[in-house]
Amino acid sequence: MSFNKILYHFNQWLFFPNDFRITLPEQIDISKHVALKQAPTSKYNDEIIDMAKDLGTLIWRIRRRLQSPEITPKVTNKISLDMDSVLSTLTNNGIEIKDHTGDDYYDGMALHVIASQPLDGLDNKRIIETLRPTIYYQNKIVQRGEVLVGIPARSDINKE
Image (cartoon, rainbow, N blue to C red):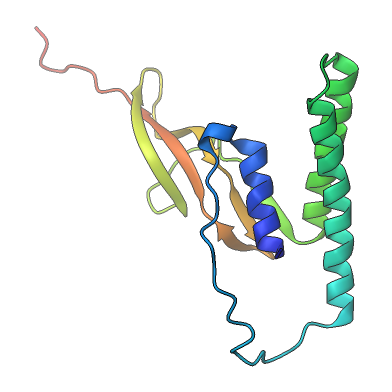
C-alpha cells in the first residue's frame, strides 16, 4: 500500500465516522508498463519504512485505547499524547496538516468551500468548520481542505 493510500485511509479513519468514509476507487498499477526514471534510494525507502512503522504503532495504540469500554481522563490524556506523536512524526517527514477553523476566509484561497452560511456577529468571512484539513507535503498541497464559511448576515436596510 502506498504512503498516499495509508495517509488517505488514516484521514478517513481519523476525521469521519464509518457512515461518511469514502473508499478509494481501484487504481490500475501502470508501474510495470512504464519505465521509472529514477529508482528511489535505499535511504528514502528506509525513511518511509521507519515512518510507516512509527505511524502504524501510534495508530494501533490510539485505536486500541478508543475501543476501551471506559474512556477515563487518563486514557484520554494518553490518546492525546499519541496523537501529538503522530503529528510530530508527520511533521518530521515533511507533512503538515492545517485545520482552518476560525481563520478568516478570503476569495482565492486554496480551499474547497462546501457551503456558506450567514451568521450574526461576523464582520468578515470566517471559516466556521473544517470538514477535511489541507495537507501539505514538502510545502506543496497534496489534499485541498474542505470548509464551511460563515458570512456576515445582511441587515434589513429597507425595514420601516
